[in-house]
Structure formats: C-alpha cells, structure tokens
Length: 141
Image 1 (cartoon, one colour):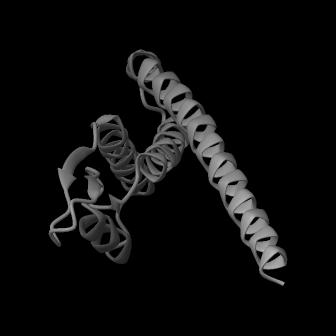
Image 2 (cartoon, rainbow, N blue to C red):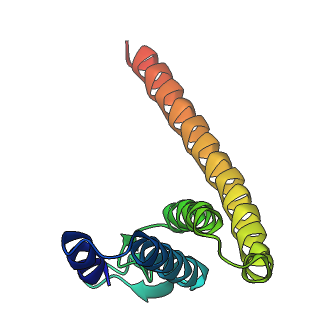
C-alpha cells in the first residue's frame, strides 16, 4: 500500500485519494502495532543449553528476563496506543485493549519492586562478605 501511495503521488493523483490512502495505511499500521503489543510473549528455555529463560515478542524482539520482557512490552503497548490514537483507531478497540495496558503496567511495577529487593539483598550480602573478609585479615596479623 505504501508503494501504491508513492506511485499515486508520482502520477499526481487526486489529493483526496492520496490522503485517504495514507490515513488507511496509518490505521492499518496502528492496528497491527496494537495486535502485536497485545500478544503475550512466548516463554522458552535458553536455546544455548544454559537453561536461561527467553521471551519472544510478536514484534520479533527477544528479552532475557521477566523485567526486561515487561519493560519492552510496556513500551510497545504505550507506543501502539499513541500510534492508534493518532491514526484514529476506534475508541471501542482502544477500550478493549486498555485492560491489557493496565495489566502490563501493574505487572511491570510489581516485577520492578521484586528486582529492586533482589538487588538490595545481593548488595547487603556482598557488603557482609566484604566486611567478613576484611575482619578475617585482621585476625591473621
């Protein structure tokens, strides 16, 4: 469709026809972006045999952690909504997908809290180990 629009412009087609075609193309792209963003990523074990989890998104992107997966999906959902609103996607369609948007936001926020807690525990354990190691050296003297 994009190639046909370019050909129509080159042929000096009626401006109204070109504008309607461009609007239709924007609408189709926005709806595709919404479908891709709404699709749940597919979880799989690591293909390299290390057992690491990977998430394949409908967009073709792959994320390596749940937090990364949710962050990418949230960005895709937000971008798709912005694109859809600009293109004039029906409010009924956006209303149906608003639940997905809210769910992804909540899941991302919850996973961010879990990740922050994990990092804090790791930092505390590392500090404790360093302190213990430093204390162990003093005893040897």
